[in-house]
Image 1 (spheres, helix red, strand yellow):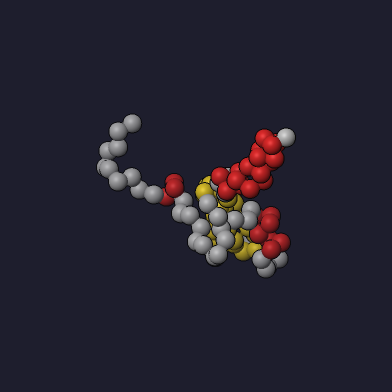
Image 2 (image 1 turned 90 degrees about the vertical axis):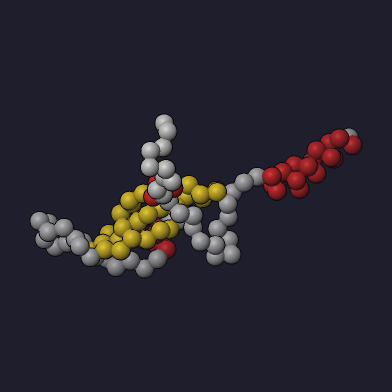
Length: 102
């Protein structure tokens, strides 16, 4: 019985502190829907968000004539609380060596 209480206390109080948080960052392209299909849309903005394209449209105001397109995504470790900045895209980092060994 004594061990059961100890194990219950461990799982309730100590194990959450050992767990790690992670989140996903999306790079979204928000552009105007072109009326002329032969001309590509040149007026757009890129946004990094933790919301996917569907969630972003419902959470932030997006004009009806704008489309939200998914460009890239990556995983970050840690918390997003206290207005911490999102982690940078690891694919966009340049290797430090000119010829890295395979």
